[in-house]
Image (tube, rainbow, N blue to C red; front, side, top):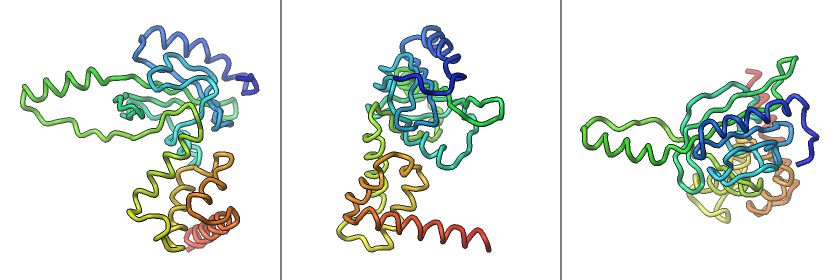
Length: 220
C-alpha cells in the first residue's frame, strides 16, 4: 500500500506488530486510515483471523461510525467474522494535535475455543448463559464484499423481493443504507441503483428527499 496516509499513523505500525506478537496468533491487530475507507488498512498483524491484509477496506461497522462521525473508543465488544469466529473486539481512535480523528487501531481476539469451553462449563454448572449482544460485522479484504453484505442484509430485513417494493420501500432502503455509511464507498450509488432496478439519478433524488425530510424534522 502506498504511504499516502497521515505520517502520524506510521508511528503506530510498530505497536501493531508488537501487540500481534505479544498476544499470539489468535489476536488480530489492525491499523486503519479513516480518510480512505475503501483501502483503509495501513498495517495488520495476524490477518488470518478475519482473512484481511494491507489495503483492505473498513468493515460495515466502521463505515457506520464514519457516517455518524462519533469517534468514541469502544472496548471489549463482541463481533462475529464471516466464517463464524466469535471475536472479542476493541476500537481505539487515533487523533491529531487538533483532536481530529485520523485513524484507529482495532483489536479482534478470536475467542471461539474459549467460548465453546465456557458454554460447556455453563451447561455443567447450570448457570444462566451470557446474553451479551453479538455484532454481526463484515471483515472483508474487498470493499465490494462489505458493500454487498450491507445491501443484502438491508434488503432481507424488508421481507419482499425488489420487484414488489414500492417507491416508499426503496426510499427507506436508501435511508437505511445512508445511515450505515454505504454511500461513503466509491461506486455505491451505481451498485444500489442496479440492485433496486432504478437509475443512479433516482438514488440521488431519494437521498435529496431523505435529507430534506431530516432537515425539516430537525427544525421542529
